[in-house]
Length: 487
Ligand SMILES: Cc1cc2nc3c(=O)[nH]c(=O)nc-3n(C[C@H](O)[C@H](O)[C@H](O)COP(=O)(O)OP(=O)(O)OC[C@H]3O[C@@H](n4cnc5c(N)ncnc54)[C@H](O)[C@@H]3O)c2cc1C
Ligand code: FES
Ligand code: FES
Image 1 (cartoon, rainbow, N blue to C red):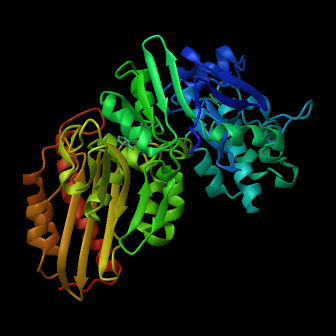
Image 2 (cartoon, rainbow, N blue to C red; image 1 turned 30 degrees about the vertical axis):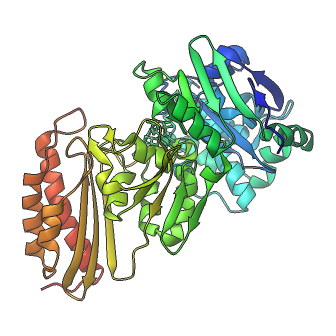
């Protein structure tokens, strides 16, 4: 078998121009590279935490033999090494020679900017909307426009003129980026480069980007200290804040198997590289309740780049996917040179950011069992605002019900202790009981004894205790409204 060559640089296109990047530059956040090395200062950096959208760029990726579609992401938190064989389009690449793009024309016409600092990010976010709608041949609606702007902050114009610009765009006048920037000449070259292993080095820095799982396992066995990086939406923020530097890293997202997502008899399999957006779209049929949860998760920019596995492996007590996955009895699949392990999520979280994960192990995916018809599933996220906010408390309940009986109960709460927790005692109280308001009120009261929330910037301990208790009642009310028989 022919040996894959090892490259020490990455190749990407920026506004159609090829860049070959190695050494220190490959470890920079993409926005820094765009501004200071590619001389494209239209991309702004304001928060450097993925929160404001000023750095929004559009990215399509070459995947074996085809391009993905262009999607938005926050270039301030994503390291350059994640963009091998990508086509990046910045605000400078949207206009066509002397002619502004349809998005820019409408932003100008409807006065979508004042100081202009957020405007390049807004224009890129709306270009993501135009690209997606023109590709799918669906109209731009207010709901879609609001969703695409979730990750973009404007502090002086206000959103109405920006929304108006979006709603007045004529998609017939939008020249798809795919037609402008994904050209056959690059495809042939990228196809050849696709099979290479990549190993990037700079003083005190090393990034491994293997092509095969066996190589990734070997690298992790020999260098257990290397940090696995997936979408870097958690790690990139820590890096920018100086809390954890991404200097010795292993990127598993070039391994094709990691991108698998399929519904099997056992459940929904989600590979380590599957983005939150891909998961949201795919789960709509098999796990609609989880897909709905993704609608109040982060912003399109973050969901296009971040992964479901990254959320699970980050293991934050307020990680939004975790309570639902715990209540569904999901399992994390781990692999090392020593072999495979399947760890139920219920025993994966040991303490704050401490997991049943060995230093040499890589998570390959997560299996989410299907719920049969007799199950009801509820998930609630309570945060200060609906969009792009960190949860104060999260709640998930999976209940197997038969007329007015609860045959089985699984309850998980987040934001109430050092890890997301399953409430075994409360589950016992609910199991085998008749469905009634009193039962859920008592469960809520008792739940307070099993959780230990803290007070922080987002909420006080008391508030979290009250919210946790009340969510049991909300769950009862919704189930009753959906037709559960109540005593
Ligand atoms: C602006 C913003 C908004 C956000 N909003 C939300 C939100 O609403 N809800 C929420 O829950 N989170 C939110 N997040 C957090 C983050 O986006 C998610 O946790 C995301 O799912 C992380 O995925 P990632 O691929 O980017 O992970 P990364 O940052 O790449 O990695 C996260 C952790 O997982 C580990 N890891 C990743 N893959 C593997 C693997 N295959 N094997 C072993 N370890 C692995 C990494 O080593 C790291 O410790 C937000 C983040 C930002 C910046
Ligand atoms: S600079 Fe704020 S999201 Fe990137
Ligand atoms: S135009 Fe000034 S911040 Fe939006």
